[in-house]
Length: 137
Image (cartoon, one colour):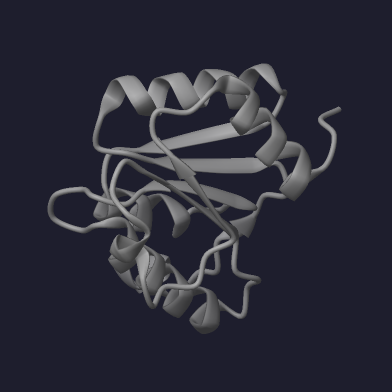
């Protein structure tokens, strides 16, 4: 069995304290990551939906914070693909938080847990972490 076949058949390790941030703007991704790390959660950063799918194949996050409008693969398309992977691997779907400057129509028809409008305050991210992951340790 070659490496690619092993990777395709392997189920990623579920990480209860892992937050995946998906945003094509590095400054935004890094800012959100800093808040998440300050709250003592683990962080992965992807700069687009395709890169995020590669990362979740290795480590399955508890929470995903994704931009909506991104080149190559937008947030709603990424979440749809993530849902298919969750079903394939029999893993629980991560909590989905969309971050957007666009209107709610951009995520119409996609199931998500929260929508945060850009620009947002650090306290908004902190509140979402507590709401969906509980108090940090």
